[in-house]
Length: 249
Image 1 (cartoon, rainbow, N blue to C red):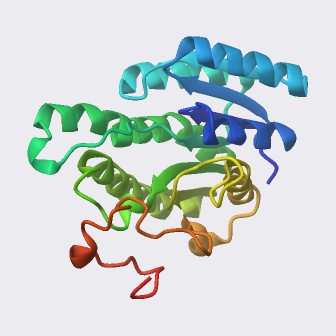
Image 2 (image 1 turned 90 degrees about the vertical axis):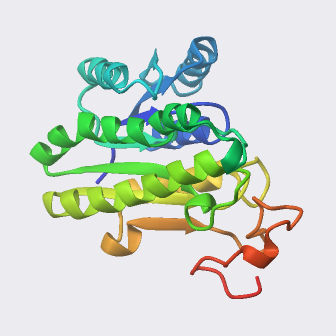
């Protein structure tokens, strides 16, 4: 399946922009959603200039499900029903669990998890009706092994992983592939987690997913630090390496 229209929620610099460029390179229309209106408008203008292809955008808060749903509907009316949804939005904020206010956790979970559900619900019916489509969620290593400094984000990524698996089981028989991509490191150009390389995996999953084997893709290149969320090794004694790592990594 060659994607025709990809909606990217959380289309910021780095991975978000790399995803937009990869799908434009593949011939798809691209729609961008993020909160920062000025930055989003600049990105869209640059992409249109570079590719001479349709790039739509709307500023919206992924933590406001009704607004996000309405925004996706507007972009669908403008560019056609999306056959690819990428949910790349998250609140990246460090705080220890006993210092994390419940109200803060609720607010951040609306972005880290609830917005993903709302976005999937917005696009899935048309995908099911067409018998084709891809929904991709940006996960992370914190879903596999959480660290207390990142309690809220870890909860969100773990929930996102579970949501993705549930959606996969529900939608896969209907022709819609769902996957979560666990990026287990810090995304930076030219490094082991180069955004262009990661974007290539999203493209592959949207074009030719390998069924159940591709419901979760863990990106952990050889030589990368599996404990990147704990660079000072404060939690070495209480950390269990995830299943994709060998003991003692």
